[in-house]
Length: 303
Image (tube, rainbow, N blue to C red; front, side):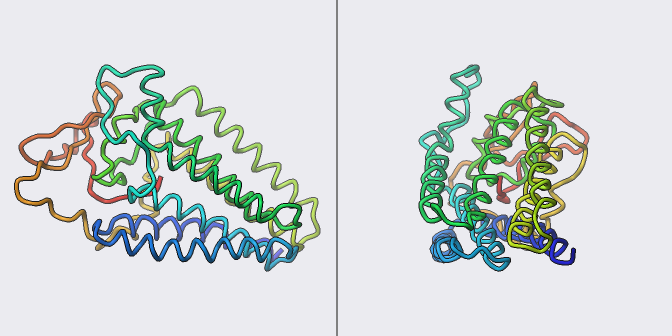
């Protein structure tokens, strides 16, 4: 029981802390991104080696190692996207008259290279763990990817809490592909599917010997999946989820100051349920009592 609780707490902490670290690095000035990506890539290489080394270790230590490495590898992909290293060919706001499938494909174009890199990574992890007893690193990465895709689709279709203050100013155009709605038709299916997977993982935990390699590995996965489902609920519930990582942005620098004569950063406003960017002669002030106007801060985030 102590091992199970320890694995649950470890999974929760690593998810929370690693997300905060990514928020912090993304909130630094762009001049620091080169060094952040260099350091992150070295950690990525170490994590890939960790996946390979732990693949034939059906032990509790092996389960912790594989899970940690899978989450670290996912963190590298997230950081590379929000730092603008691996994104997509579309880097402009969505035109006002763009709707339907055209809008969907434009939205997909904002991060298609990111998604292809993730698919390639799945292939690498599958190869590194092929026919090996410890594939928890691969499953960790796949679970994170599945819930990431679900979250992106829900944001595209419309949710209540967009948390646009976490979108960096350099990626403000992304918000024009978001919609504000109390809920969308996909959301119930997303949380239902996520909950079912969580319960199936818990079932694997109860079927395994307490404290064993299998039990600990499935506890780590079940906890991560449950956290992903909770994150989905944060999309529509009146809960300030962003406070969980506010510490990672405290005292962090904003974007580098724009050179003289440069246009101001885009302001983000919600009109008729659709996010829009606008440029004016100066910064747009947020109106605290107007729910139809939302201004992005220059702090960055994970998504």
